[in-house]
Image (cartoon, rainbow, N blue to C red):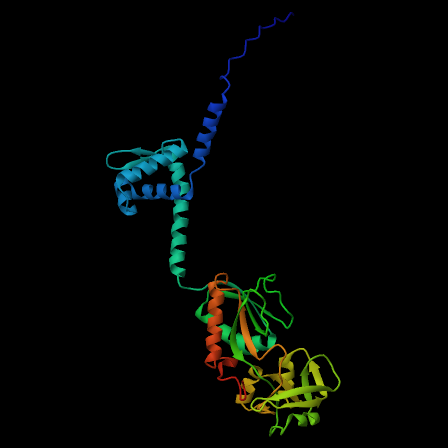
Amino acid sequence: MTLTKTAEKPPRPGPPPRGPDEATHVERRRSARLALDANALELFARVVAAGSFAEAARRLGLTRAAVSRRIAAIEAQAGVMLIARTTRSLGLTEAGRRLAASARGVLEAADAARRGVRANRGTLEGLLRITAVPSFGRAVLIPILARFQARHPGVRVELLFTDRRVDLLREGVDVAFRITRKPPEDWLAQPLMPLRVGAYARADAPLPHPSALVHERCLLLAPAADAMPLRWRHDTSGEIAEAQVLPIACGDDMDTLIALARAGGGTVFAPDYCVAADLREGRLIDMLPGWRLPVAEGDTVQALTLPPATAGRTARELVRFVREACATGGSPAAGGPATQGAA
């Protein structure tokens, strides 16, 4: 059987190639359809919810003509009619119904955001990264911080209690509580409270002079050491007295050494704010009233923050709260002034 070859039909002529001007125009129309932003979608959703241009204008505080012009601009951007106008109301085209579903979500999100802003106006919230030397952090800061968070429940904290030198900027610290004479450059230092390092023990009577420490069982916040000299200074006369001490216990945790002194294990050298409650309740006494062990870093606890233009409001408010608590004696365990002999 012989197959008859069918003549091939010539191809249909396609649309003429677009010139550069026409292609650019098409691309612009396509971009316009994609350019509907959240503001346009929110306006469209409000007009749909109102049910008429007149009611939408009343709710939005605009003229009917202004609302109509904006909807027309949105339709031009979308490249399709969205609303079928009538004299009394408006109806949605198929494209309008599809867009209304998306626009409703934008409107709800916008309304929720505005409610949140209004509700949180004047409140504090967010995460604060705080660092402090452990002795101050545990004895003073913790009870004050608990009261601060009770007042501002939206505030969360990340605590870094350490004796090491923290790089505040690199480690993203918002507030640092330090005993320092030289705060880092570009950080604002605010004095919070004076401190006095004294000698404290469970005893019946204080010592007559620092030299008597040679006979005491001393507890020292330091690596294990042999006999070492400590230079004491009198608060009033400025007299300097050197005492040779032989620590019977050394350690890196002040709370542990104070607990040992509280148990009758010796005389601990500690900042006054660490033993405030023990002095008030008679568990320890000041063994050298009027004398202090000078600290190289200084005799004042300071709060460090970035300058006001950079520091967050929550960080600034925390510093203010801690400063007021310390000034009114609301520091250690909320129990009143620091201790006897504090500078």
